[in-house]
Image (cartoon, rainbow, N blue to C red; front, side, top):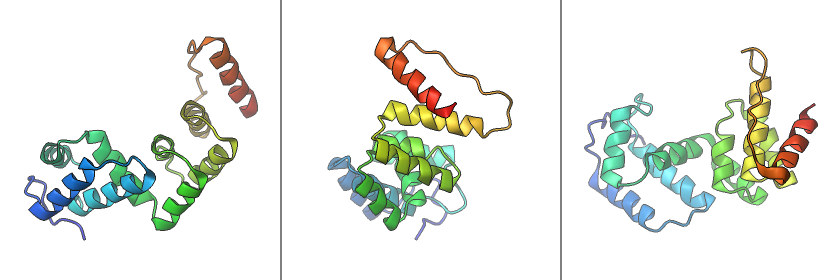
Length: 166
């Protein structure tokens, strides 16, 4: 159940205490992030989304990174228990999940998630693939490729990824 209008930072002490305790024992696996997200979302005011004041107050109360509030909360909202089990079977780390959460189209996200697991993409490969596919589908004109110096091996890997798209 969501918190009713607690944007001012006056959160139930027990909820903050439980969340602090969970944050003090980081496991850094998907279940941990999901559990953190569930507790954060329980404190989230209804209809408030992620207003700056709410995030700032929660950040100050918990003394944890703002990114953790945003990412774990979104993760818990986007992936139910079945989705969490699927991610665990695919053995994708949380940094991959953060990249996948950038894809609004759930079907496209699921396809890329499956492909990332099957091909054992690195974080960089997944990010590059997502950027390419999401931009290609946009209507904002021609896609621009950003040239980065990744070193000889990195450049070859990047060219290989680009050639798969062509």
